[in-house]
Amino acid sequence: MIRCDLRLYEVRSLSEMGKIRDAWNHLALSAPTTTSFQTWEWNFGMAKHEGNSVRLRIVVAKDKFGEVVGIAPFWIRSNGIPGLSVLEFIGRGDYSDLFFSEPYKDIFVSSVMEWIECNTEWRIIHLHNVRQEIVDLISRYDGRLTTRPCGVCPYAQLPDTFEDYEQKVLQKRLRQKIRQKRKQLAGNGLLTFSVCETTSQLQADLPVFFDLHQRRQRTKGERGRFFEEKWRTSFEEISLALLRAGFLTLGLLRIDGQPAASLYNVRFQDQELSLLWRNVGSIGPVQSWKHARPFDDRDGNQRRGAGVRFLERGRALQVLVDQRQSAVVRDGAGPVQGG
Image (cartoon, rainbow, N blue to C red):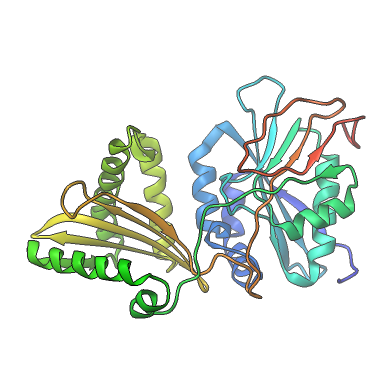
């Protein structure tokens, strides 16, 4: 642990966020536990999508040399209830997190906790799926917290090649089924697979990706995530930013020119997040799946999620917790500093 004072300041607007883009991604690329969801592109896109419904409260820490060594990407949401403001991670995803240069870990987390204590804007804090390491640090700082385990979006560690995946991961019966499906595909018509390399290609192919997703969701009786034009627009902006930064690959499989499947792949360091959508009826049952290689800490430890939920200032507040989530819960007995 480095024993020195950090200078914390808040980023409260998209324009201010834009000024720290390079420093943000430099830290994200060097921090030991980050994923693609800690990139500036993803967080900026999510913040822009929410617009005036949230208040940005991104906590940035600089060392004595002025270098950014820690970022806690928060926003405050009204939650639709007057006076009941919630402090959350931007995006509220399974892999949302604060991140930092490893030597500053302890002092950064404790400094963020002090900032949280002194901030009077929130009534509830809900930090979804915080890594156990951070939960332990928070618990050390504030003994009034208890933890509950939770699960995160599933992931798998994949070998380097598809051949190794078939031989080392899949059972023999499934390998045979995949080979049979590949032969059927080849017999259905001319197969082509294209990969977007330019922004114009991405803008042309994303609507196909959206359509495949929507078809999949409709077979489940759901309207789909891309039902809203606002989210389609925001997702396109995020995707374009990820492509320009070199993080995104979008591939399309066509049979005789007709879209059959789309692969949305985000690569960040040694990790990958892939979304695959298959067309209805064209190549058998529709399936969707996600995988990462690997979504874990770079020292090889699997990432286990935990949620953090501090209850209302000054008094206890009944809050329902999803069984898949975990919470580090403050019982709300007595006002906290700055409340």
